[in-house]
Amino acid sequence: MAFFVSSILLILIGLYAVLVKRNIMKIVIGLSLMDTGVNLLIISLGFIRGRTAPIINTRDLLVNTSSKVVDPLPQALVLTAIVIGVAVTAVALSIVMLMYSKKKTLEIDEYKELKW
Amino acid sequence: MRKWFALALLIVLGFFLAEIASSFPFGQEKWGVSKHYVDRGIEENRGANLVTSIVVNYRGFDTLGEVTVLFLAATALAFLLSTCRCRRKYRRWDASLILKTASETLYPLLILFGAYIFIHGHLTPGGGFQGGTVIASAVMLMLLSYFSFHPNHRALSTTEGLAGLAFVLIGFAGLVWGGSFLANNILPLGQWNRLFSAGVIPLIYVAVGFKVGAELSGLITDMLKATKEEE
Image (cartoon, rainbow over all chains, first blue to last red; front, top):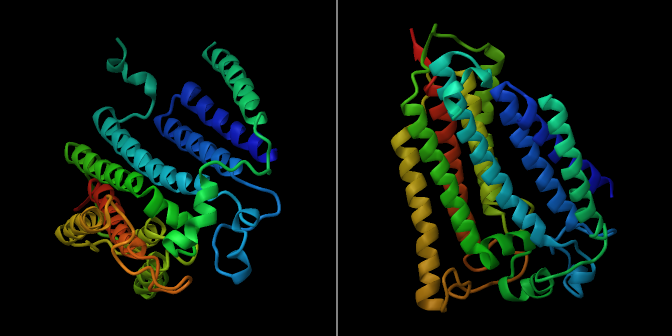
C-alpha cells in the first residue's frame, strides 16, 4: 500500500511542478518525476508478497513457476517506459537549450510568443 | 491564485488515482496473460530471465517500436541542436590527474561490463538497454575528463544503423522460416540456463545493446558539442 501512496504522491508532485513552477528546468524535472511515479505504480501492481524475481535460474523454480515468482509483465512494460522517458527528457532538454539560446532566460513567463 | 487552482486540481486527481489504485489488492496474485508467459516461458523460449523473454520475444514487436522511438528522439535532438546557436567559447581545460587516470582505467572496463550485461541478458537481470546505457556512461566519463575526446560520429551512426537493421532482419528471418515476424523457432533453443540458449533472444539483445550504446553515446556527444567550442 505504501508503494501505491508514494507513487501517486510522486505523480502529483511532478504535476504540481509542471503546473506551477516558472523555471523551465523545474518543469522538465517535474515531467521526469511524473515518469518515475508512473513506473513505480506499474511495478508495484505486479508485486506479489513473498515471491522472488522472475528469473528461473534454480531447478526448484522450474516446477510450478507461477506460484513462486512475481508478475514479469509490468516489469517488461516499465523497461520500455524508462527508455522512452529518457528519450523524452533528452528532447525536452534540447528544446530548453534552444529556448535559452534565443532569450537568455529560463523563466517561462518571458516566452510570450507561446500564448495566443 | 494559480497555485491554489493547481492544488485543487491535484487533490481531485489524487483522489481519483487513489480510488483506482485501492481497487487493486496490493501484493496479491492477479495474473492475466502473464500466467502463460510464466508457466510456459521456459518451455517455449528457454530464456532463464522471463522479463527478457517477454520484452524480446512475446512483445518483440513493441520493443522494435521502442527502439524506433529512441532513434526518433536522437534524430530530433540532433536536428534541434543543429539549429541552436548555443555555442560558447571555452578555454581549453584539463581535468585533474586523478579523474583522468581513473577514467582511462575505467573506460575499457565499463565497455566490457556493458557488453557482459547485454550478452547475458537472457540469464541475469539486464539486457540490451541496460548494457547500452552502461557503455554510454563510459563515453560520458571520457567526455567529462578530456576536453578533446571525440567519439567517431560516423562510426557511431553506422553501428546504430547496422544494429537496427540486424534486429529487423532477424524478425524477417522469423517471418520467412518460422511462420511469424520475430518467431523464435529458426535457431535451436538449446539448454535452459546456458549462454548459448534461447534461440534468437540473445542475438536480438546484442543488437539492441549495440544500438542503444551507440545512440546514447551519440546523444551525449551531440549535447556536449553543441555548447562547447575551443577558444
